[in-house]
Length: 429
Image 1 (cartoon, rainbow, N blue to C red):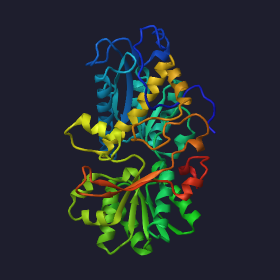
Image 2: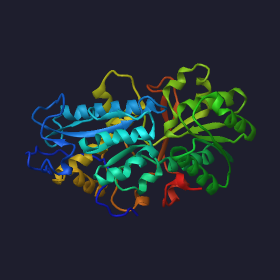
Image 3: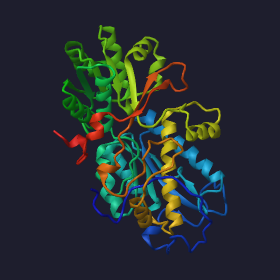
Image 4: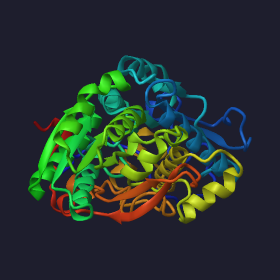
């Protein structure tokens, strides 16, 4: 059960709101901290000169190991809010997601420094890349009533005040990957390749929980970042143990190396990768592509660029002829939730930091036009009951816009269905 709070997380669906006078809808005296991030002056390069401005902060990885994820997610969010602003904004405001966008290079210290620099100028942090990175700033954010949307899927967010989490956790995803391996692929053993720490251990521990529940053998391959030289131990372990299916929670760099080198040496099992493990660039390697197409499945809870949902169609229609990117779609999808949160705060006359926290605590779902999992955006009540547990699977497809085609509809395996979340999975020993 989440503890009661005076501050909390961020994001949801939306309802049209009427324009606001400057003294209305939660706008307080300029000396009150809760007016931070909201101005009566228009945004820089405003679409609507008569609107005020709501500033959202973004701290992400644009040059580090997850830059192929962070950069497109930011672009997706910026395109979404451009569309919203061009349609008149929300409740007398445009929304700015460009002024306070910073690159943390996936460094925790840098992340904290960048947060301190923008803390006084934003209403909420609409994208915070990295579980440990976000944990490091969370208490400060709570003290300032700043809602945080992590660009990570750690199961810890289920239990953290001040956080709006979307999508299925790495832990539940790991459970579903193993249940699929058993029920559909007939696996009697699984290998678990993962980075140490929050992301990798959350996925790995979910997979191990499912393996134990299903009574199958499990082999643990903890690894670090890097290509062939860094993955020698993992590759030799897989070739020796021959698990039927390997669950992998790393970046795309490690995925390409491990699959390519094990396949070249005769391994014939399957790999199922966690959501951050994929990049369409992998299919550009002519030597690697056949192995990926034969051996790899990609897990996610948010459909890829080409998905047949109203939200995905709206996105594609609006952006037109740009290079398709699945992470762009994730950034756009998450923005639906933020818009819902802000519009509800406006409707309830609570457009200030404390009011946004209060609004988040009462949220009971998001209409994302099909882009987010069913039931997402529910933050009132019990954390375990609110946990999203569904996973879909994609296959590499060179003919697809982003190199992925959905092959398995969203499902919840028996382990995730019955599991009671009481703590972050990555903390389990």
